[in-house]
Length: 129
Image (cartoon, rainbow, N blue to C red; front, side, top):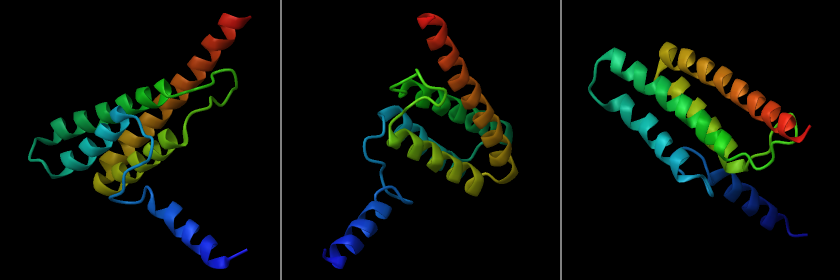
């Protein structure tokens, strides 16, 4: 086994979706929302408008993540890695660019996503039973 191949593969995989990188296979909706999260921080607007856009975008992202679920039959629904990566990137953006507002919005969005995933699983089980 060639150790140089391992080093190359490791560096390539870590560079695929880092800051400024695109996430391979991410849905267009998630990619667009990530772009807006970054852009809105720099736009001139009222604080209440920024708050509304941040909360709304994160909630819409949670809905988009739910739309990518490929298997609702398990308590932890299965989804593409790209959706998980996009969600993680949204967290990083919200917490690093928006401070306390980002923390509040992120906490709210995480609770919302948990509820939506739990509800989706419950609906799937109810349809089968």
